Each structure stands twice: as C-alpha cells, then as structure tokens.
Image 1 (cartoon, rainbow, N blue to C red):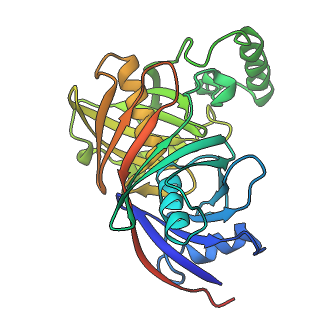
Image 2 (cartoon, helix red, strand yellow; image 1 turned 135 degrees about the vertical axis):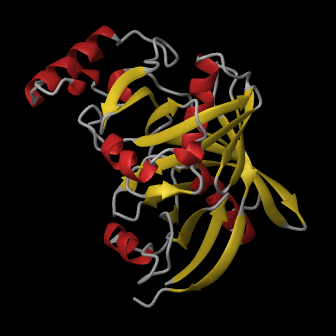
Amino acid sequence: MKFSKLQATGNDFILVDARRVKREWSNLSQAMCQRHFGIGADGLILAQNSEVADLKMRIFNPDGSEAEACGNGLRCLAKYSIERGMIDKTSFAVETLSGVRQVKAYMSRDKASQVKVSMGMPQFQPERIPVLPAATNPIATASRRRSKLSEISHSSSEQTPQSQPILNYPLVVQGRKLTLSPLSMGNPHAVSFLSEPVVSFPLAEIGPDVERHPMFPQRTNFEIARVLNREEIESRVWERGVGETLSCGSGACAIAVTAQLLNYIGDMVDIILPGGTLIVSWDRVGDVWLTGPVEEIFTGEWLT
C-alpha cells in the first residue's frame, strides 16, 4: 500500500489514497504511527470519495481512535490531493466527521506551500463539547452526571453556537489549580491560560489526567497558552489519543477563540507552537479560519 508522509508545523501525518482501498484502518493506524516499529506519525489520514463534497477525510489517532476534526491534517490532505491530481482546483470542499470544510491552497511552483482551511463555528453548549462540569465533584455518581447532562441539554436547546461559553472553570489536577475553558472545534478542547512561560508547564504529567478527566466523557484535547501581546500567543498541546504534539490546528483555533472571548486579542492572532506558527482568524459570526505552511516529507510503501 502506497503512502506519503506530510507535516504541518511539525504535526506529521501518513496520507493514503483510500478511494479504492479497504483495510482495518483503526488497527493499521496503531501499527503505522509507531515511531520505532512503524513509519511514525501523529495520525493516519485517508482520502476517500464523498457524496457531499469534493473529497472525504478520515483521520485515525496512533491509539486507533478516530478523530472528528484535525486542522493541520486537513491542510496536509489539501496539498496531497492537489499535487496528485485528485483535485484539479485550489479551492474545494472536504467532508469530515465534524462537517464539510472549505480549503484554499496557495501555490508556489505548482506546489501547495500554504493552506487555509475553515474549521467551522465553535460550539460552547456543554452537550456539544461534551463536558460535564458536575463531574469535578468526586462524590458525583455516573447516573447523576448523566442526569446533569440531560438538564443542560434541555436548558440550552435554544442557545446559539456562541452563547454562554464556560470560561475559566476551576479544576484541580495533581494538586495544581487550573482554569479551563471548554469548547468544541468539531472535537473537544479545554484551554488553560497561564501567566508563566508554557515551556515550564509539566504537560506530560498533567495532560493525561485532563484528557481523561470524568468531566470530559469523550476525553478532550488540552491546550496551555500564554498571551505575549494582542497579536501573539505561545502554546503547547496535549492531543487526545496522541499525547503532546509539536502543533495542533484545531487546538490553535480553540486557543484563539477563547482568547477573543476573554478580550486578550483581536480577530486575528499568531499561535506560536513548538513546531511553528499558525494564523487563526475569527469574526465571531462565521467559521474560524486556520492558515499555515505544509510540506511533504517522503513517500513509500507499507508492506501488508
């Protein structure tokens, strides 16, 4: 099976043209994404046929779970499909588990060097993230949490996607006090702003506990961020099903949206990640847009 490996600000993916290929993708992603026994990647991305868009994207994490959204992965798919002639235009639509997304590639010498993608509208309703704030109570039972979610669902049924966000929700993890702002960018996120440099935060220790905390029934991506000024934010990301990555597109969007709601920034910001810088813009009305570089690293064959 032929594959290509691409990276977008250090977020690396294995790309496969799966329009005519069928495999046990969950198991295969676990094998292919291993850094020492496989190819090594933050995820396996499939390009498939779509009935509602120009292409369909599916993405599997290294632990075999399927992700709903991935901004950097979507940008990699755009480059991959254009340069292989799967798509004959630079602006097109891609079906994902979180909805149809628009992509625009910026070409240089017949290569897509930068890609801009729509990431959909942020969602703040607890049942859409999903998040169960009552689960921070250690005596809360599973049934109590389910009933709480039902109450939230009924009480927020008339909310718009931007209404009543949960901002700076207090949570103690391993004795460390955090303030989390949960939201969905098609997949769940929890953003925590810090006063100290992000490099000093023990993400490898705290990240797994936040990801799997009972308040996140489908687990969550966890972002730590520090505002440098109104145009720049530094950050690190613990990705659900992956671990810490050099970059995360949907995570960058979650950070930018939260920063806007907290009045830290304007409608455009540079998110500085260990793997590079992503540009995020949002007008608080429509989709969040993500822009950044993308590069193909190598191609090969997986011996199945």
